[in-house]
Image (cartoon, rainbow, N blue to C red):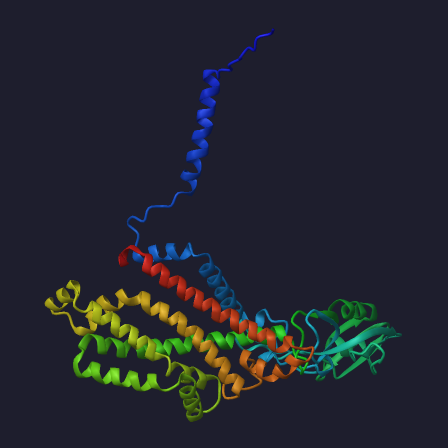
Length: 436
């Protein structure tokens, strides 16, 4: 009978040291690289930002808002249609589906070149120097360019038009050809001289192009993507200016009511309750009718109805702070009330004011879209997301629902982003050490 033999393997000291060192690396290296920094000697603002940065959804929402703001600021510099109000209409291209591609011929207008700086173009757009003609195809017949106009129907050919090369490239009153060279004259002066071969190369390279309508076109043949981008500028502008008006009025009245109390507080609280009792949308509509329809009227109307929330928050915060020791010390030093409010109290209530402002920003966007949808907000041809929905909501029951759905989704995403940022700020402020 063969006896079983147990073999015991012992690790050498070198092996044991290696395993211990590997365990040490696995255990402590992640802690070293990914440990959270201690919140020591950090300002309250940096602590709140660090807490906010750890909120994934709030950061995504902030990035989305930043992208919308950047796009709105650049405006006509990034839109496919850079004409004022993105209002280049081609009725042949009505209600094209997203992703549609159309070929164009660019024909020079007989006008003087328009000189305009980059900043003005970014803000107001630029009137085009060329007329864009949608075409099905083109061909060269001797020295004449012949195009077939775009119809949108496969079985129906469009009317044919003919152009001379110099008509396409230059503003011209007349032209003459000598020895295969075209001399172009505009307002009595010779402005160019090109050969026929050079002219045709210029036409093929620069004047015939294909444009993709990434979001399709509306019923007037306008590029929907350009309309959405300029519409974002309107919504963000209304939100920013309306919130600025609301902050000025709300902080002023809330500070007076919370700091001085007494009859001043009673009067301001009565005013707040009166405004609070009126439905916001009805009050905005009434102010809009009083001031008239238009772009700037919407700013004022929305701003004059949103100060109530800010005033209530500021009043409550100041009432809770005005009896603190640092306020009493400021009074004992004989500092004026204005300085105590602006330099010592208001900086301590910045957090709640920022949170309520983010929520009000979202409300301002919704109110502006509602006013434009009702036809008493921003007026055509200025694009607005609410106006786009009003013009195209009838297509929802047809096969062109994207015309109303796309601006609706833009409103929803931007409003939700501001709400998420507001919630993230609120959580960050509540979790900061200053509130423990």
